[in-house]
Image 1 (cartoon, helix red, strand yellow):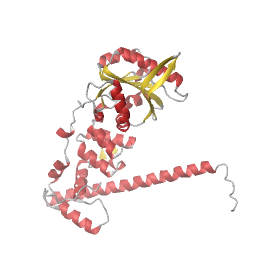
Image 2: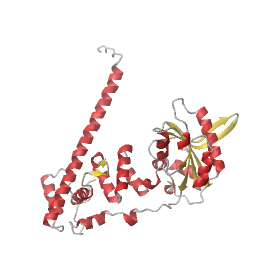
Image 3: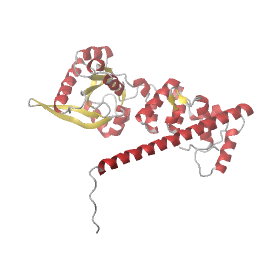
Image 4: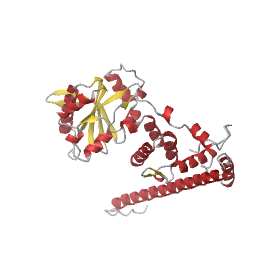
Length: 351
């Protein structure tokens, strides 16, 4: 067996750099392909719009085009009648190929379709487009956040972050919390006790982390702290990878009381002293209460020297879902396009 020459001392570093460069090149290539695809779909949508304007809105442009493109490109997906309708809708509602200030081409095609068919208000579309691009949301995650009206809840928790955290950390931390938190996926009624809620959240940890938002990593439940020989237990402990800090979550199956903030303040002091590393940012606390009076919470937090947020949780959804009442369904969009007869003959989604 031939001798294997020893590796140069800098080989591992060089290999790691090459891997990073290759990965970056692959990502750029994928983004370039996606930009070209989205641009092509927009141009096809514009062509359909112009032809319909010339020939009349009821001209059977889309079904004829779908058949002819399928014949010309039998192995290429994306040219079904349904997808051609989405292209037309995209060109009509995004004439500059943008959601507000956000380029549509930074998103995958069916993320764009989701935004067009699930969000009516242009400003909300822009917000979800920006969040999707920044957070790297999957299509499923985007749909869940739209369904749960994240735009109306993000950053709404009562906090003392401006007073207790430096800028810009205070703003980033504020955006990491929301109010209310929706726990209707747990299947519990409104009379559930704290331990029942905690157990259910752990059983549904994936959904719980999705509701908490990007960056939360689960550390443990009933995390033990020992202070001067006495034992204390944190309900839920997380680490936030973007804020670079621990997050202590306390559940209260009652209305918020000022003494809850004092208890959590004590836990944060203990975590900062015993668990927090030197390069970690100050630990943040989140009180999840059944109900809260926002003014009472603001007064309570004003006298606390640790960063704490207070928010409600809902075990049974009270937040109105505007989807069913105000957002266009796929069927409504298709009726508005008036290109296909409602005979079930069109192809399904190319997703």
